[in-house]
Length: 229
Image (cartoon, rainbow, N blue to C red):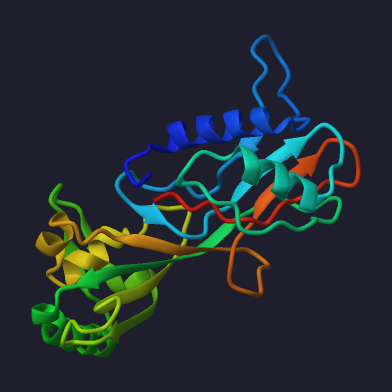
């Protein structure tokens, strides 16, 4: 589902909730809509392993039951991984960082490792996008590593992994980091960027939330991952 847009994914989840028979809460007004929120929109063309989703319910349902119903009703390519309750009064999910990885061809691995050392040693790494806008790739770069087998014999080959801090203002895009390693051409040849985690505020462990909240106390939040492929 790498080529499914954000709005299409939201509609797919709405239909999944309807098929699952969940008591969804709706907005008020002349055109009420189900209160479903995907706090971290996934860019088109990017796959993901662990995405947050919030669903507001009209009355509480045990998280295990919500997860079971959604799993049975989900379309192929969308897997729901886990669920948990959220205490009453908990604010909506707020992304604070994103983790990504992208495959690297074995013949480019040495150059990528060399560039990683250069970026780590530099105080800033300016980059000009195709639209002419200048960005500092290192400003939002929290983690950077290269893992895997340079010979290409490993199961996953070589992977460039990095974590970007989320800011409300315009921030570094994952494509900027890939471009800083001169991997743009490689990415366009099927070496797509994959988002592996959305880190939420106050989250102490890896993984994210599929949140189901209730309009009647206690609200229910469902930590789960969507796995668009």
